[in-house]
Length: 149
Image (cartoon, rainbow, N blue to C red; front, side):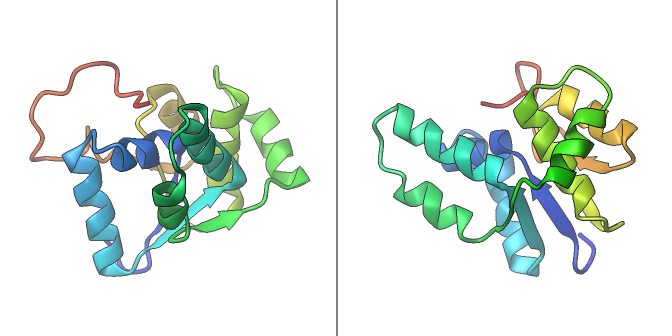
């Protein structure tokens, strides 16, 4: 991983790690932390992660502790404008994740997602995309469509 890499993470990646569903995703997070790379997310990341636990009547403490490692960006009017302009079929939440990555305005930004539709929209908008599961050269076969939680 390059120095000072900026990773903008969506909720599917964070939740998959928190739930222990992906050794590759956990290894990716450990590598990012070891190298001191920057983790970003939007308030949508925070909301989706905390709501996942709240909706299941589970404590949010582990999720909140992990979110503290992120630089959380507000969902500004500019992010909303970017989200509305994105091409392809995206939910509002997914569009916010892509727009947040775009709003960081750095060539070092990579959107981290398991969602193939989000990845296509991000690439079409000029972002680099990484999926810790499908981009892991040591992984075995993975079922499903890579969309995560």
